[in-house]
Image 1 (cartoon, rainbow, N blue to C red):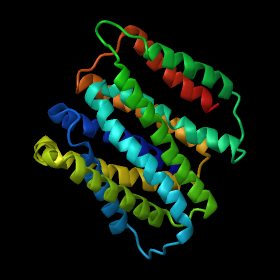
Image 2: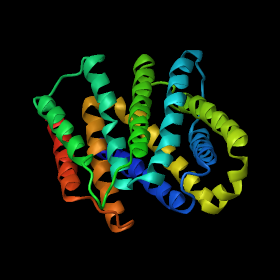
Image 3: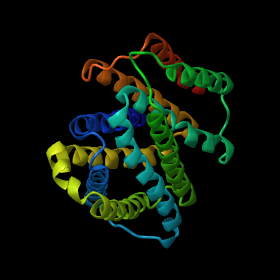
Image 4: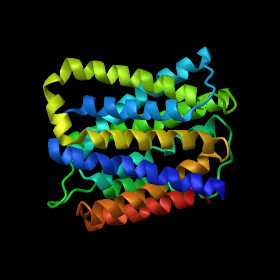
Length: 283
């Protein structure tokens, strides 16, 4: 029961981060990305500082923290850019597919068992991606959006891989310390980038809704903490596909009924096949 609660909380937390970015990008487009990302990381950092007790830093976590920070920066920056120039529902969908990367890591490097639905799931995944990428006159996908969402796919997936690597190495220890160090690196890098490249965009960032960045950061902190806890209680090859499918459904419902985004018939078929994909991967 506790695992189910953790899983549902992660799904809602993952979905809400993309959902909270949408109203900001609706106001300012692709401006103030570094300000937004820096504020988000500071909010997440403060979450871990406040909720953590008895911190004990270990120098060995630094390489994992550095890897996480680098891929986390890629994810944050290009997710905002992708949402600003493409549909929320499909951006979130491809971001959710990125959780296949830690699933592959668990299968290949941790020798976790391969389910009977793994091969059919991969085939369905390829079909789903093909159909979702089909263009129409009413729902065009730009090449720029494809590049942005690919970087989000890689960055988001590798964040989870570095988390799992650190937790495996230290047998579940130093969760908060790992996130505090990682987010500190991210916050410093993002604020430096903002001061160098986006000094004129600070007012735009504030008018666009700085509080959306804070909400994203808090949700991010909650999700990362729960992911590290649950990854020690559940097979990652099972957990991440479940998170992926749940996030797809929640984000689609919000994008369809709140932001009035519509998928073409072919893309919607691809969406449904995407759900079937993660079901097969769990067999």
